Structure formats: structure tokens, C-alpha cells
Length: 120
Image (cartoon, rainbow, N blue to C red; front, side, top):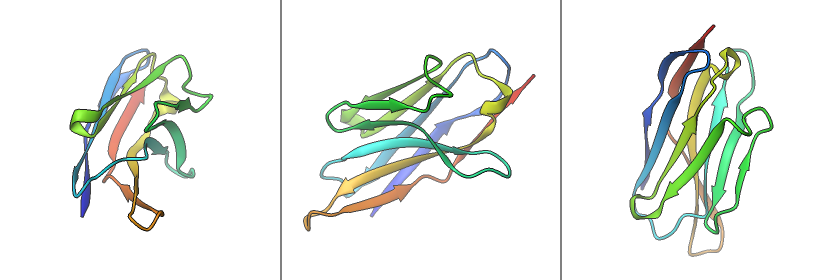
């Protein structure tokens, strides 16, 4: 079994910064990709940033230039550094991981979510 543990989050004023961390643990041979999603009240969950095993990084347009995703392979972890935060960044942030199986498919895992609140 694989578990995703999320750290960070909290409350900050607009313009401030926060750092989210997500560490995967358990039966891990390799990780194909890890992502951060977010879900604001009354809205659908959306992809914020992703990083693949070969270091391809993508960001949502709304966070480009403000958020930076990095990976620590030794810890099976990813960090999301969020700067210049805006009230519209307020949401529950979820870590997500894609792990390959011996059958050539993928298994998907979610973290429990961490609240980010940005006040104006």
C-alpha cells in the first residue's frame, strides 16, 4: 500500500508565500508522476502543477510564474513553493501520485488534502 502525506498549508495574507510538501511512502518501486490539485468551495478539482519521472513540469496558467514545483527523489517527495498568493488561490490542495504496476498499468493515490487560505 502507498500513502501520501502532505505538509504545509495554512493561512496567509495576499502577496504572501506558503510551501506544501508531499511525501510518498510504502511499497514504491518507481513513481511516474506526482501532482498537486486544488479544489475551492463550489468548484471542481483542478490540476495546479505536475512533474513526471523525466522532469517534465507543467503548471496551470493561473499559477505560472508564482508557483514552483520541485522533486526530491530520495524522499519520494514533491514540494510546491507558492508565492504572490492571491485570495483566489484559497482551496484545499491535494497531492496525487501515479505509480506504474508490473502489469504495465498505473495505480493512482491521493493525499488527504491540506487547506490553503489567502485573505485580502
